[in-house]
Length: 409
Image (cartoon, rainbow, N blue to C red; front, side, top):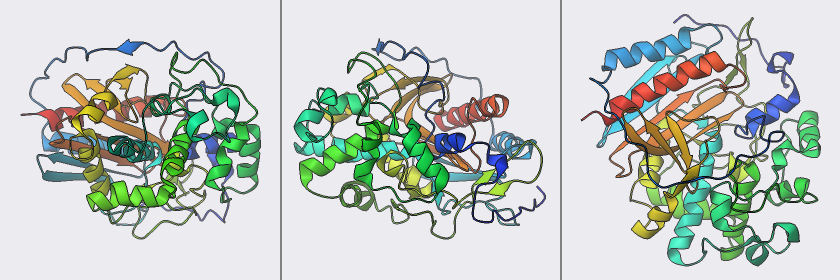
């Protein structure tokens, strides 16, 4: 692939990034644009995965590489992509295009914004505390966070983790959007995020419907802090990243990225891609989407979280009880929502993980339930079903082909 030149951003988002509301939707990890206006679907318990049909011979490594190349070569597509496919500890790295629009290819040790995959990390913190008896899945907001609105009091930790809480989404509030429009790098104190919707009632009775909300995982992190008297950042390090040796994973509060990093781009329909890697601060997403990691670290995490390494058998059983609901953006196959994890039922089998997108990045991390096989799929452009449905569907189809290769015996 030939080098593409990128003009400087001059310290602010260009008009090609569209309106600031769209920027917020990208920044805060892909809440569907229709969620705030359409009625939330009724919550439907899902008791068992649909039977999976084994595919014919899985795509060869060369075919997978060609598919990935086709994604970065398409007009309007991401400048670069990297996939880490881990089968029983043997990692294969596929990369295509460019990490930054110069001759360097993406690396599995490049830092990147993982967007809503950060929700799996906050889930890991909370569920490890449940394992220790410090938190309970039926702990309520009224019990753990009595300073929050009384109208939210009956919401439980389980409902927050499964996006069945009914909490209004702070990232869609006019006041939050206005502040972000004025200064995309603005610092937001973590404890201030839910105040943007503190005057609003629940959207529905807790536990009756599914609706993805960035407020949920902020409240999860606040519950963890309240139960332990420790900062979420410290809990994240001691319970998850330190436990797994994730030395390149962090939760920054500013806009800078550690070097080297996979540069994120806004790719307009016409004209050159624009580097937006550091145009928006991470504090507005915090525990819901602010984590920075690498493909290698993310692979290590998802193997442990979807597999048996981090949680006890009894808690994993609760984690994997699912209801009808999709990650945002949707992952491969049929999606169902567990506790801070999603079940993806593909044509080749079942995997568990999380997706996310933020300004300049789209992410997928998943693994088998035994933790023996895992996959991370990262591109340096925001791709959603609404902004570019054809390209998003193409990427999702490629993701499923990689899952089939992952599950091949």
